[in-house]
Length: 231
Image 1 (spheres, rainbow, N blue to C red):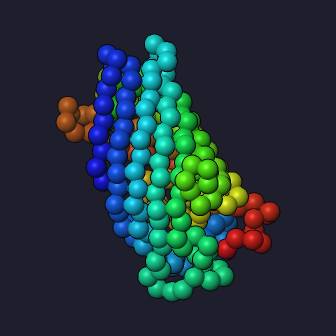
Image 2: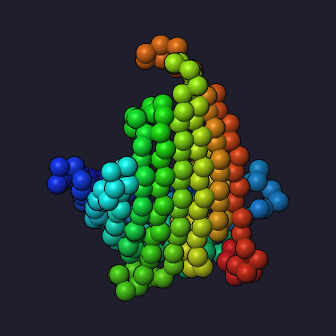
């Protein structure tokens, strides 16, 4: 992955240009509430080649950013231990060209990007995938992320995070929402929609050292309408 980040107008505008060429190994465990989550997933490799261009602009003094991105990527899925078929990975998602325009709105009042101790972070984005933009299929995603940080005393800090994601009919299986929690395998709990909440306590007992206790809950669901049409 290669990217160029630009800052303009005294920091009020940020731009992004990037290209990607990646092969990623993953597992597919199905969508929604399945009876046996201990069973192994279907291992696959997704090859993705494409690029992204976008910009965000500071629209308010309280760190409110409005953004717009365009991305186009060609994807090819290869199964590592089986064939495409019912109950596994949909064959119609094997090779796709995807193109999306993504508007976003972001509020960021955190005092530090890496280890914040106070402030809010709010991000709402809605990728719109369209054939008219150069893709093979029309579908939509919706992503919401919220974070909050608050100092309890000079060395103890509370952090909280929540997220919710939704996807429309026609979304490829590898873009379906999944539960994102520390300690949970990525993409193991996927569905047409997913949500999670997490909290942490950080004890900064040394300027460069800290202890963190955290916990969270999450879930992924699949609607009855899609249940009979998409494995």
